[in-house]
Length: 308
Image (cartoon, rainbow, N blue to C red):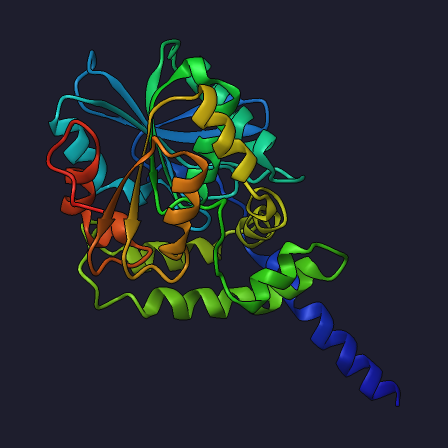
């Protein structure tokens, strides 16, 4: 009996122990990073600039699990159009710090607002949000409409998503949510990334870069907190508010996206009839790096958008 209880205790504690043994993001790792770091209220934020110094500013917000390297194909294309492009790592991802606490809309909006202040960006910008970054960009635009000239949403979260059964359970929160995430997510994430290895990508080695996030302490808890935070919110009222007094919206969707289904396009169209839409044929949820040229062409001001 006692040995059975000890075995059960060891099994239950294993995910927590693995997380505790992971190294913290540190100066040695950050020494390899391109770009710079801003000291904000919740910790260091890694950021990079692309494009001409005096170009119109575009700010790109990445999604749940893939840090700012997700923009390494798209950002140079935007910069080639004369834009000054800012990309950064959300807290809990990439080279940024991993603070404790809820990861709700206010958490991410504060990081973005403080980073813009740190970089001296005061005027309105073009704001591009991808996946969870679309939810962040939507919330920021609704709360600070005077700071956003154009809102571009790429496969945006906030109107429905399917991240699998574990994510649905974790999104409800509760005392066992983090344990379940630590136990089940790493292997699931590795498999999901590996399934995309054969796909074309404008970001060299993106699968290895994605999987390397699992090495660092705080990454998996950050994903869990986002699932029960900003990704648990229905942004329908926020989109309706933007339709009344927010910036122009252009949404770009992947026709084969299984994470943010194309039905979300119709929901956004009903909430904001003035929003424009582009659909990328054959594109899944990784469209920013698998269909970079088409996404770039769909961004307002860069080319001919594909018909919705």
